[in-house]
Length: 252
Image (cartoon, rainbow, N blue to C red):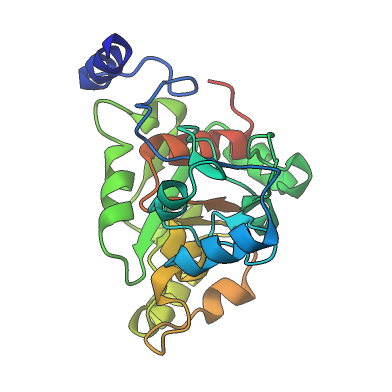
């Protein structure tokens, strides 16, 4: 209880001193851990429970790009599934978002997948244009929090800008609805090259619960290189900030 009070006290300050090592509540659902002893029968049962289709019915692995972090699997099978409060779950490769049974290693940026020009040009200053492509305003709200007095992402030279012409890349939230598909392409084309594409949240990465719906059109995602995947439903500000800093190779 005292530890929880300390965390709440830290988050209540106007300034979180160290965003790279800031503890969060044990109640926060971050990187999952799956028992190495899971059977095919249990995997099938977990897959049937998952509303997002994030669990593989054969192996029991969880795809964080599809996971809604609803905790249904852990509630039904606590001996097999549990969620840690590790919020550093961003990845440069989509396949690295798949958590396998018995996997103890944390999710980390694959250095070989980072384009060289990203760190050469944007390490000290990165301006981003956020595009809500049919989002529900949850990820958008969390991204807004990255610039508040608590997280103050701007201290690292990372900021959101109003125009894509002033940006170094775009941050996409939402499943990309058909009505936003062309607008997203226009925004990307207006961003000077070389430019980054960052997907934030389950909906942006995979379509989430809307995957397969005729109301979404994900041609843009399928036809462009994605530099960073930041899972979450919604993504925590610390997940976003740490993911970007890892991508840029910044320690502090």
